[in-house]
Structure formats: structure tokens, C-alpha cells
Image 1 (spheres, one colour):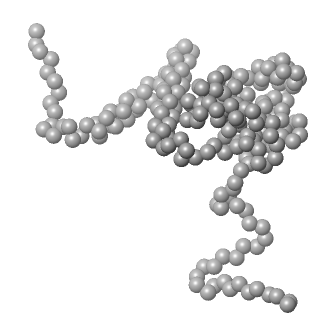
Image 2 (cartoon, helix red, strand yellow):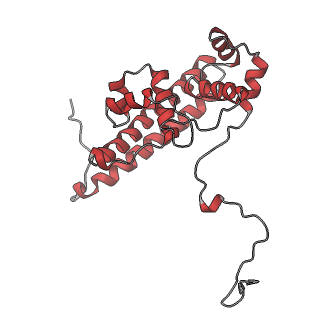
Image 3 (cartoon, rainbow, N blue to C red):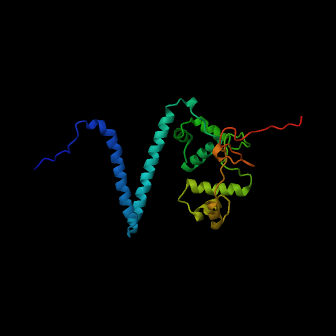
Length: 224
């Protein structure tokens, strides 16, 4: 029985280990993408579903690794030097806590804060005004705004819920909506609040741009 031979390696192969790891991962990803592409076009329904499930599982694994890397970076900072979550993100964390059915400790561990911090956010949920500790991403001063926010948040946190299931869930909470109304709310693009960057700021009136030195002069006129 012949002995299986190992592949020949270059003399300085340890120097290329890190590059080899990246190339191997890229090659594996190419093979997976090719195989899934073939499976998606298959006439076999079970094969198509399996390809879709495999892609979803890989995406979950990649997202978990991405979160681990980001969390590892944040853990290097002392707790007092970590940036604070803005009011809208605090509300998003509490919404995710409800969707995950997490305890205070589990939520705090996931977002690198203390359980006392999460408990403080919960106690101050009903504060109002621009200085509130916890705020929604868009104002819900009117009842329809509240319903629309609730429908879109349910779809975001529970993506497998369809229009009918969302309507049934709201009905159990005492809010009766038709499936067509839920669908219309899901299609509506939510408004974004918060500070606007300079590139997104729209100036009012005429805009004068200087193309070279001394091209534009500004004169202040005073009647005093």
C-alpha cells in the first residue's frame, strides 16, 4: 500500500500563512456561491429551499463574527470611556430586549453596559420632551404615527411575520387593522430624525460659489 504523499511546500512557507488563509476563505466562498447559484436554479423545490437555508445560516455566522469583532474592540475601552448610546438607540435596545425576551443581565452583556443602566432606561421610558433619556426614532404624537411605527418595528424584529399575522397580533392587543392597511404601512418609508450631516443639509435661497480667489465678495450693509 503506497504511502500518501504530502503536497510540496515552499522553503519559506510560514511567511505566507496569513495570505494563504485569506485566499483559502475566498476560494471557499467562490465555491459556495457557485454551488448555491446552481441549486437556486434547480427544478427541485427542496434543493432550492436548502440553498436558501444554507445562505441564511452563513449570513448569521458572518454577522455573529462581525459583532464579536466590534465588541472585542469596545471591550478594550474602560466602561467610563465608552461612548454613550443616543436616546433613539436606547429605545432600539429595549425593543430588541422585548423581542429577544432577554433579562436585564443578558441585555447588558450584549450591549456592553451594566444591568443598572438597562434598568434605569426602563424606569424612565415615559419621559417626554427633547431631553428624554429614551426616545423613538420618529415622533408619534398622533395615534396613526404610533400604529405605523409599531407595524414597521414588528416586521423589522420579526421578519417572518406577514401582513395577516401582524394584523392578528395587533388585534390581540386591541388594535384592529386590516391586512391591506398593514401592507400600506409596511410600504411607507419611515422618517429619519436626528442630526443632519453637512453633506445632507439643504440650503435655502440662492447659493453663490466662488470658483477662484476674489471671485465672490461679501458686503455688509448697515443703516446705522
